[in-house]
Amino acid sequence: MKIETFVLSGKKEDAVAMSAYMRNRYPFVGTKAPERRKQSKTLIVASKRLSLAELFQAVESLYMRDEREYQNVAIEMCEANVKRLTWFDLKAYSRFVQEKAWWDTVDAWRKVFGLYIKAHPDEKEIVFNHFYQHEDFWMRRVSINLQLMEKELTNVELLTKAIEYDLKTDEFFIQKAIGWSLRQYAKVNPVWVVAYCKQTELTPFAKKEALKQLDQ
Image (cartoon, rainbow, N blue to C red; front, side):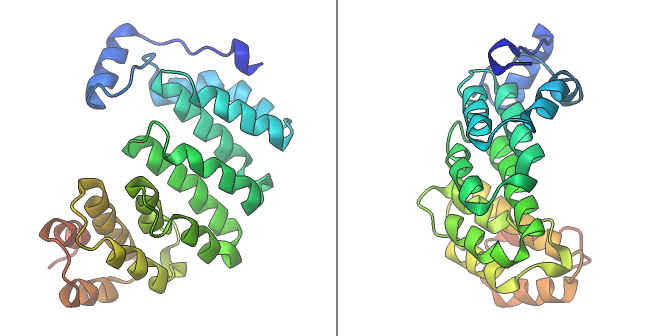
């Protein structure tokens, strides 16, 4: 299956509802996630046979399409190929974090980078520094939430650096990210998270998000 001929099919009523859920920022085909993955499966499998240059071109081509589902497929294509990418290769994809940026695609890209550091733990700090202190707050959201899947392997120094750089940033998606990152780490180290929340001047919202699953 070629990128040029790949077309998703969906329902008009679902497209309207999906766009409304995303505050009408993007048009949709109307293909819900399970069906989208079913329709794109052949394309994703075929992408593993592409050269790395062809892979990037395929992701870029999908990303240029208007309907939101095509950005989802593009990210899933990169995710399916992440094991054969070096950091030099993967870094080029970070530009897409800032394109058509909203929480859904930003967090999907965060998962891709999270999978990379899980496979290459010795490169975690290099990846983190690419996003840390970036002028684009969506990129910084990735730095805050980069280690969501790391559990006991979380580098607390990097986590606190990311949080404290944006401690008072007046941006909902940053404060949400701070709370999410702490709440996730609390699943393996609740004592540390509770102590950190007590000694750090988090916003009330971030603190509430961080402790919402703990008896505090």
